[in-house]
Length: 437
Image (cartoon, one colour):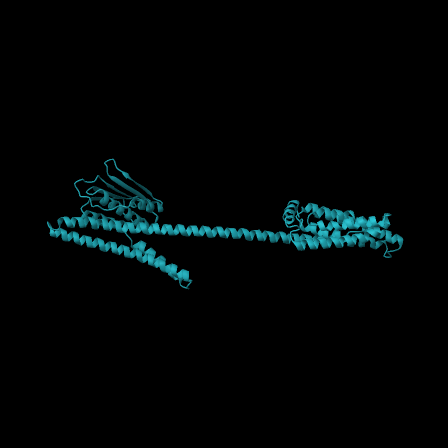
């Protein structure tokens, strides 16, 4: 255990009354090992006192203090190993050395320090064993001969050093792996939580965008048709008694406008219903969602293909002429087909611009220009000042027309500009990229 980690564990455990131990069972284990080591060293201290010529109580006390150091193995593993190396010449502290070396290898102490202390343990055990075995041969206590002294010393030193060192390295690596996996799992959980929050934000954004798109479509469909219907109804009211034939013609136009508005609304609601059916199937987890999604996608694509296009702009201009507006249409460049969404957006821009003229500039002359360029299509609707002699149709305005046109054009990567002209009229200009190209 590193000094920093040990201090942290010590601070946390001290608040619980267990010094540097994190759990009670750790304290019980270390205290038990410390008592066993102290008892072993005390017994070996008796023999050490006799060999060293010191009083037996001093040897026993020395053994008790040295063996009790094992209780601090989690806090100071380096100190425990150093003590075990120091008492090796006294032929004591075998449990102290084995457990201390295991704890050192399993801790976060730098590997170079662990290797150095393990080498010292190996060398100390080998030297002490070799010296004592030679003394035993000289005393006749060992009859194996000097040829086995070296082999026995090597086996003894490796047996007391290698197993605890290798086991400690394995346990330490396993512990670090588990901590890494735990940290990775926590990190993954945090990432999943962030992804869930992000997905919720994107879902809310998608719902907002869908509501905006539906509102824009409803505005484009209803505003233009109803505006023309109001203009024709006003004309019908004005000529009903003076010119019955013109009144009938205006009544027919009002009916046509109403039917066209209902048709477009019905198509739009049909697409919305198909999308709701898909969401219902997906929430029920039925085995059909893929087919339902495919059907909804096909329905949406078909709705886009069947929607208004550039070829319908001439008819759109004709409807405004029939309502009494003076409109000129000029087409520049070679006419060609574009992506369905591009053509539909171009149509809606012209449609909404003409609707605004009906609302805000009654009797004004209008110029509609359509230009086919190499990689884009441009449209411009410009009207002069309102004719003060023309009666105001009294159409309400919510101020969403220009906003909707800008959103449509910018969504396709185009450019949208609108503003007052020098003559006192209004100009709407838009350029759309040829996405099909």
